[in-house]
Length: 320
Image 1: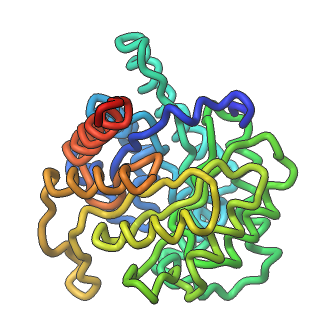
Image 2 (image 1 turned 180 degrees about the horizontal axis):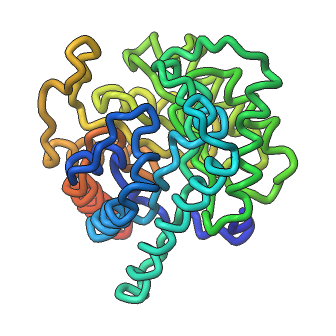
């Protein structure tokens, strides 16, 4: 991995969009409990195609198709630890392949790869990442995260993206798991079911400010933020993140569509142009990196890139 000291982080402003949902749009079957991890084995070319589409849309950072990959999650389906480890590395390799081709065509661009590492709840396949009520010890949490860090630390990834974190305890466990790798760069993004003033809490119930402050205190942390949250709440949450620490802020909300758990379908719609206006506001509030999570597509990221172009031009204009 790229060491924190040599990470060109300050030039990263546009993150990619949803992986699993975009694979589904391309015809991949992600109905199984391992989501996009199935596609790593069955149709890796689709993953490269998704990465390529986001790069062409303006992404400076690619997240790997590894959110759902872990030894624990694979063991639930009779798969060996070595298979999970290979899948983690394969996910990084596919992102690196897409980056290499893009770099040859666009040598002026510097693209970073973030190894996507979902929370412990993602390995339980029961939605527990959205409430964080795990029946496991702190030591088990540390072990779960350390197993993956150990593998990805030897990959071509530039940083670790700990995503959709529901609780203070899980952030603390990741900090403990990271201790053997002080030079690695990482970000921590939490999920918040609500973002109304006075109710700025992560899924498990702790305050976002407490979670962000804790994560920002780890020497490996380059950014703290929010993902897998409705875009309507992001503005309030950015303010809370900036009060919590001086670390960079990264936000990548869902498209704005809703998930009907009973009917097992998405509801509502998403307008990329409206997402652009929101993204511009998030940049103006001080977010360094903006992208999208579930159901956001390359057009959403193209609009985020346009928003950053507008904001950066205003920032560089002394008359602005």
